[in-house]
Length: 200
DNA sequence: CGCCAGATTGACT
DNA sequence: GTCAATCTGGCGG
Image 1 (cartoon, rainbow, N blue to C red):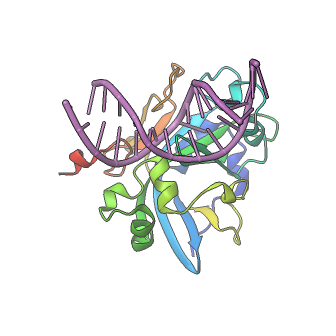
Image 2: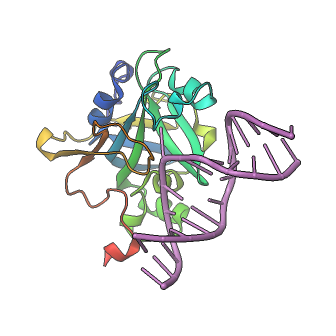
């Protein structure tokens, strides 16, 4: 059993949390079994002043969720896919971290079944892919990732040194900030944005 | 109720 | 590189 990342560590700037989540293990309990993967790509989102964030677009349910308890899930749909975020910053301040990609660790057979593909590199290498692989939908919204009895958790797994962390602009957003808010493990083969042709 | 944007993906030129 | 399917929430009528 690995130790879960403490609730207090989510009360911080989303960029700090996004960096910190690299190398952590995302654990999903599924009918007595476990599917898990190491987080290798994240993005930070803010509130006012962040044109890419839903929290900057007036009052809406996503913004209200980002203002809620840090360390809880925020699950919402985009283009027919569910995206998994973890709320950051103290309550009242909108902030969140999008989990964009995992390196599969346990329960690859479950993920393959949920995804309908066998190649491990297509299982969890994207925000919509990983939620499908781990059977994450809105029924998992608002749950704590720091509690032992939660069906979705984040645990300590591996330390990723600064030298292995790269940053870039966020993916898929129309208007991004100048600061690079995407964090990923350099050279990891499970980063998002790889199509089938790149697998050859 | 209809319309449409969007933190995506997969198929295709 | 381009493009359309996909679906939820927000907004106008």
